[in-house]
Image (cartoon, rainbow, N blue to C red; front, side, top):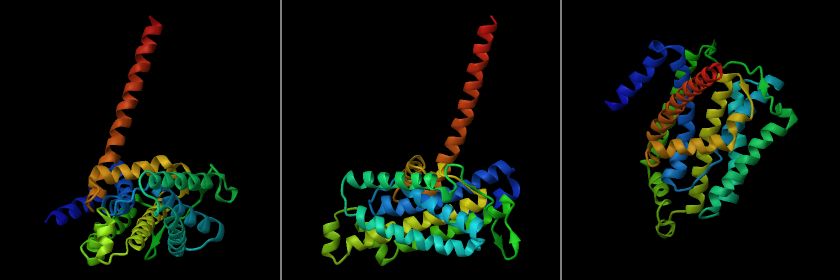
Length: 286
């Protein structure tokens, strides 16, 4: 019943809500996909990562470059982006997931910053100016230029990812993944390959981030390095923690709460700044 109410509420937003809330709903869906990977990686498997925004950028930049410079279909670009993300996540996972304690999060910060700087300093990627002219996605011959139509695609993928992750955690490999958060030596004594499972979870979280980046690029039809820096990586991790790091649906809750809180704080700060400016002007006039 709870799932049915949630899905009905989701479906009602693009039909009944004003454009501002539809846009906000799109971003909540994109953030939920990334936070879901962190729920599995950090909340369940106990491996902290601050660099997920870099994988979002990899998915976004892959489709942006291939669409604008080589006119390749966005759907083919998704497969290429997932392949590149898998290769990079395997490489980084083999290096960093061997670390323990505070060395692991520090390593993820290091490669997260490095990839974000790479996006901004490689001339072929548009530098800090970014890449423009990314085409809209087309589904069954319909271009998804309208954000209300795109909303259904984003949340369709988000719900599919939630369903897949929930089923994964209820399976035998999922129970083995849950054991990684406790005493890994005890789990390995029962035949669990802890090192392999950590890399599998790391790659899975990276692939979800890549899909979110691909969706983001075709929603905005423009990308630059700003949304893929370490600050955004910290924000993704914060979403997973606030929503409940051990809960699959915590990804949606955390993404919703943080997105709405940011919007409210921006409005409050804007009003406060306007009030301060008005009072200063009044004082100077006196």
